[in-house]
Image (spheres, rainbow, N blue to C red):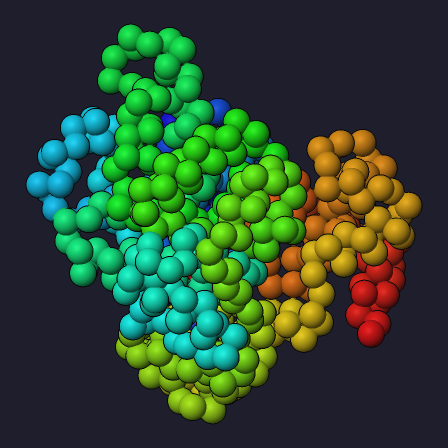
Length: 459
Ligand code: ADP
Ligand code: MG
């Protein structure tokens, strides 16, 4: 029933969409279900998802909500995303001799590392060369010198890529080793799940503490754990991780960690764990310089078979400075635009296709700056602006802040939602729509928004 409404909503916007765009962008989005006020969709990849969210979702969603006469949140899963936990132990022999580990993963999809996160696809430049060299050394001689290796740096700079490259390389050299890659979030979920199952033991087929420990303490020959900042303020998980760490370290098993901050800057981490993070080698990844950005673009274009002229690579590289993920996103966006308009990739097309992203990098504004400015203007607490309160006195400024974040930064709806205390992206979408409408209808709102915007744009 609701599925039909969704199809109708999609069909209702199709006449406004070029046939090529419709086939390329709209058709591959699958609706998995509608229930409990949420629509579940699946997109073939992340860029597709973002493109869909930016260009089609708002109108489809409003058509759908009008038909269903209710508000909905939208979850879009991405087909190609690697599942959070991976075991790439190549040897089935090794796996068979460890029955507990096998029973542990029963019922889960057997996941893999992202195939392209290898060393040969990683472009080395001055800002990542130390981290890259450290990762290579650890892959060459695990647990010989630096244990743990702690890689840290900002979002989208290649931490996960390097971490998995170590996994690929060790898997290649030692096919019988058990290489365990796991996001820290997964570690915590597994731990909490196994503790709960332990309490109501007997509920068949569950993951128990022994299985958990076999998986993380006994089984790995190398443990790759992504985004350890996730342990902040999670005391019991930290405690468990402390013992996991000790067991592996004592057994001379290599541990590699990534984080968005230095150990000493991680909030809410016990000292004993913090100090262990610093036992081995700490390597930082920083934003790439222009030359590296251009090299990354060219490498990416090559693998994606996109014909990217040098001047356009330089143009994108010169304008998109913050992180590699955005750089890649810009290239794919541009290539998609070129392909469905059947145009060659030129600077003019790049300027046009990337306009929104480029203004952003030129304003250099962050969501935090915008939030602070808006909070100051309306005299509300920053904390409330990001919080859940629905009172108009904070809800209205919040919507304006979301709207400005969307206009003045290159963040996607879900990313903006995250910066507002983890709100759903559909909340952001409707805030943006609402302020757009108010700006059109109400001169007061329009002038407030443009005043704040002009403050923000002042150097
Ligand atoms: P992080 O984990 O630091 O947030 P990721 O490892 O997920 O970042 O990297 C984001 C994207 O950028 C990935 O697609 C990755 O392949 C790519 N990337 C990052 N650094 C490089 C690099 N030096 N060379 C090639 N691709 C890179
Ligand atoms: Mg990462």
